[in-house]
Structure formats: C-alpha cells, structure tokens
Length: 118
Image 1 (cartoon, one colour):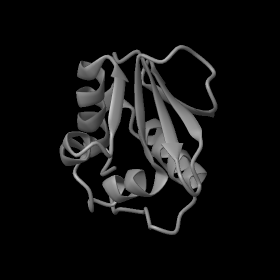
Image 2 (tube, rainbow, N blue to C red):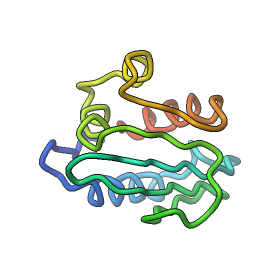
Image 3 (cartoon, rainbow, N blue to C red):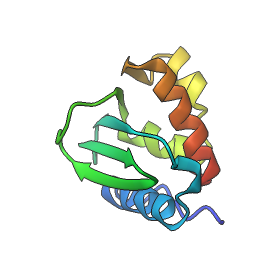
Image 4 (cartoon, helix red, strand yellow):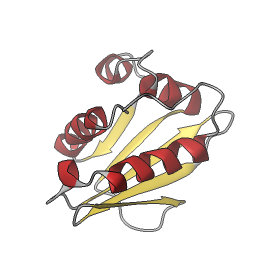
C-alpha cells in the first residue's frame, strides 16, 4: 500500500483516508474496542474521534463519545507523523504530543496505524 498522504491534505481528508484504509482491511483491528480522540490545534485543527469496534472504523468530527485515549497536538505535527517526518515517541518526549487516558491504548494505536502505513 503506497503512502497516499501529502502535507497539503486537509486534516478531514487525512481522517477519511485512515477510516477507508482500516475498513478495506479490518483484520489488524479485529477484537479492538476503543475510542481515540485527536485534539488538533493550529491551522486546520479540529477535534476528531476514531471509533474502532468489531473490526470496523468510524471517524467522527467532534466529541461524540467518551474517549479511551486523547491525543493532543498541532495539526501540522500530526500530518508530519503520518508522513514519517516526525516519530510519535519523539513527539511525546519533546512535548509536541500530549496523551490523556489509557497510555497502553496510545501505544496500540501506533502499532495499528503502522499496519496501514499511516
């Protein structure tokens, strides 16, 4: 699967692509029941939730449900992570990424997204 992300994509388009990739190949998320919230600041920032349930992904803009794990960062840094220009662990260690809630779910998210070349 080629990386279909570009730095000029809108954040909403990025989340649509994540949802599409997971739903096209649900095996890596089978058995995972989690709600991830992304609170993105800066230009093109917004709040999104990624709902994983029964091998299915659904992206919702805003706070639709209680999140198991909330990730806070600048929208540009988020896109840089998806493009491979910023390491998630490095972003966390330098304060560019803040995580609230279940840290083990945040680590699991990094593993999940890597399976989709995200």
